[in-house]
Image 1: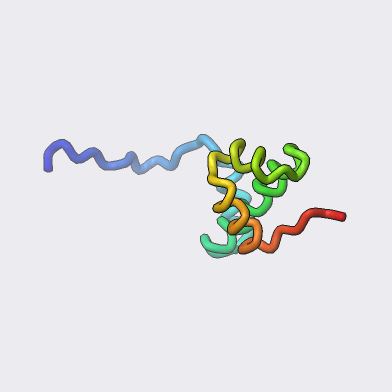
Image 2: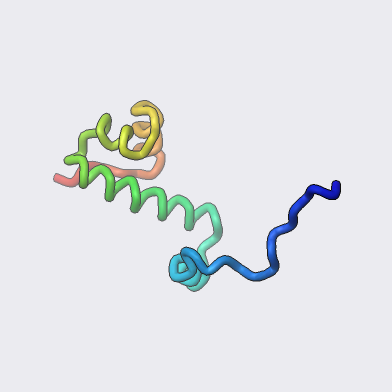
Length: 79
């Protein structure tokens, strides 16, 4: 396929600090992804006053999916 474009061998510099932090963590991809998702969902929930419908809209998710994700990631509303 002559129209196949291969990525350059130079790594992208955009997001590099995050990539360096991720590499230094020593975590596997699944655990790193779960921790990142959890932190970002917690951030959005706090910003939206723990309104799950508003948080789901802000995240671009269906409310029912966010409920499932919150449960799967062990996120509980602070008391």
